View 1 (cartoon, rainbow, N blue to C red):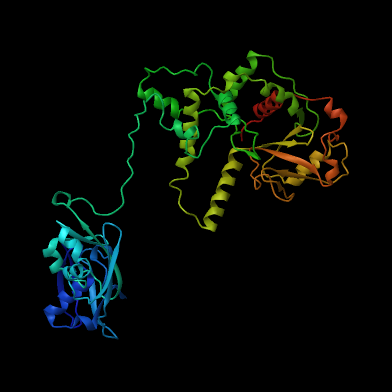
View 2: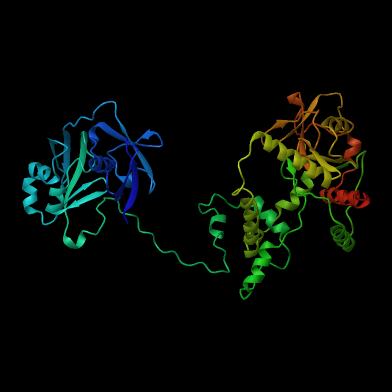
Length: 467
């Protein structure tokens, strides 16, 4: 469908010009100038006070339909020079000559490729994305009408049969995409990318262990006859968050509701509660990671077999993560600081205490409970009470990467709410060996299991009434 532009002439009048996609801006200028007696060689076209190139076609100019172009006098009259035309033939050879902008394509072809034209049934000249087909069109098309006024230009001369004239004449051939088999509803399509097939996400052994531990019992197999509504409910069903001590700060430890506390009490009442040995202030307990390591390492091979329920849980977590990042707006520094303060206030209102675990190089872990507004300096003083050599200087840091923590900041500012794992190291490196004794012997004799450390936090929070 033809489009239309409006040319604002120097005398204040307007001229509407119907344009086609392959029409050059020079032809638009010449059409408007001829109707009002202006010399097109002494004028130019501007769009939004910016001069546009007259050699480009309207489809590639970026100008919208019904736009207004201003015709203004140029400082220097446009000169017409010769054009060096190079024609590439079907066999790859090239013929080159010099012509004026007023020369027709038929004159150019006869001058350079007269021998080939005798054998061509339907000759076609291809310039950029324009095709000039047959003798009649070549005789009516000049170099100037194609926007070629000076410089050098490359064209292609090919022979097309009449039934092939509607086929695009470029050399690019799109790759053939093989049809992929349709994936059944019982097997989510995202499972291929989850398994590391190019989606940027792969399951590790630690993730599989976490999935197995958090997966509900008895749901490893899914009934294929289950309807779609039940499937959606199983995917979107929220899971009770649990304590995550694997990173520098844990975000899944939360203030339990009364219903959750009742569930925890029922689970504990079914079996004997683990023994908890409180060794100091702030409900301090000490346990060893070596004791729990034996249990986690002795896993059968069937433990690592993925089930449909495991993949559904991974898909649910990926959806939650991507939904918060795709539509997130760009924030300035002030807005990011405002969001950070808002998050801190939300945590301060939600969590009344903070559980910290200090891990030593000999794999002993000291656990204590603090308030979110307390400074890290109090944590340092508390740890010093349990050290075998309390006079030595030490530092607390998080990994990865290693970041030494400033003592003057609060636990809330350090993002340690509701729980976090800190690492201990002496300033003097030769003291940080595995066989070195960090905790006093009297406290090591009162060890608690890792399950007992979790149970100690549950007992503490059941006793603390919400405010």
